[in-house]
Image (cartoon, rainbow, N blue to C red; front, side, top):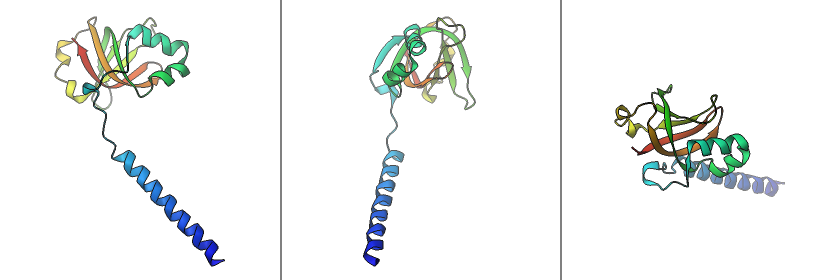
Length: 142
């Protein structure tokens, strides 16, 4: 009976060590620097929105957690609850848009932007709620 308990004790310790190693790896994983990375996809805001609105599951499989470069007309410049700047790009739908949350390093460029301007941004796609969401965005044009 004691050897039976000893086996489960050893197996439990091994599983705990593997769990701690996994958590440590994920926690210490370096942050992706969007500015220095090449985009996985380059699309217009209309194309990206169309793909998510036609088949969200397929679009999530393709774009989720990937670096996407999107270009389009700037509809609005706003902020979020964390104090970050959000650029909203036009889409064919009046109810939805592409929302691009800029990284903190982009705060000096905002003064040069205005509604109606053509812009190009790249960021990490996190999917679609009402709008298609890109985070950690950096301006690539202008």
